Length: 61
Length: 227
Length: 253
Image (cartoon, rainbow over all chains, first blue to last red; front, side):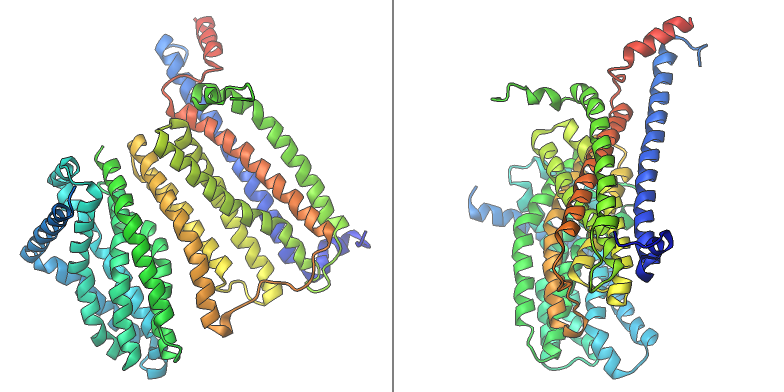
């Protein structure tokens, strides 16, 4: 283990800004992608449900 | 199919397209005029120092040639697409790729060749002379046909698509990067005294590669567009 | 097939949709687990690089992102090629599903590359062969996606973007080579990427773990996106949920 303390860990030997920007940006991109996909899926299924239900009964919408 | 038959098909298309271009001379003149204006703007923007102009000259001329080619791409297939000639071309017995070669050759004669012929004059504006000027003309002679061929793929892909003018630029410019690097590199290395031969042969290699691949890709793209 | 599994069965969207649904959680879970181990290895086990200090730790995201960006482009082009050759709907949907993830990794590779370049080279950006090819790769991903969204007819959009993806596969290696060639001419501008220091085996392990994790993440995300595309595109109902929806409709009456 090379880190004496938490602050040393976050400082990354003076390169903290670069290192953490890289890792946080990557994490944000992934989280964003997953959440965007989730929203897309919900929207697509809602649309399809509406289409399916619309064919059987107009009042349920 | 016999070779003479193929040649007839190609030359027929070239003759037809040249005839059409002669009827609308202003179209062809515009892209050449565009090239001259763009190239002339750079010294006004960068400043008149001959040393600086000589350094940026090859790059500016090549980028301007790229843009001039790009501007004229819309004309390669659009007219034939709109009046239905393209659909007839797909149906005739000659392979579509061969006919596409004719279209590309015509495009190069109308918009590429004038750029090559004009380039010594524009090179002088940037203080190029002697061997580098010759290399510039040679690099454009080898490079502009490749630009026409790659451009034809893009033009066929965006045929009849909304906003196609901008889209074709986004598609084609990344594909132009190697040509730009080799073309401008030939002139730069000739100015540095290394000689431009290596870059010129790479341009030649790109020309051969695109001659083999681009007509087929363009024909495929045209079939997709006409389905 | 000698394996006894009829793989062709899964080439139709109807069969692929539920299969992908079952596979996604597995890929996602393993990806998260490996990412956790990889990050632990990268930050707590791998030693400090004696030349670059702690800044080198950026490679634990940079290198996997760069590899995925290129790998995914090739995979996308392969699906596009299969789609063109066999006229398979599923292949085009896969190609469509890959593009955004590939573009995201390309963007991340460029961003983290800049973050690594500033402390190491002293510049956010240099016209190095890898960086330039990566930038052009991003443009090509953008081209594939823009071409698709600009064409309204789905069949044409599929095929046109497939042709462009395939043309781009030839372009990227040529660009890499040409920039390298160009950099050797301009001696002053050339920057050697070789760090000189040998990588400790724990560094390499951490990097490989992160790469596998990114790869599995990509598979999970791409399968999920392919499922979304299937719902959006196919006029057929969602296969595994059709019955439930109809049941609900009947009950609502």
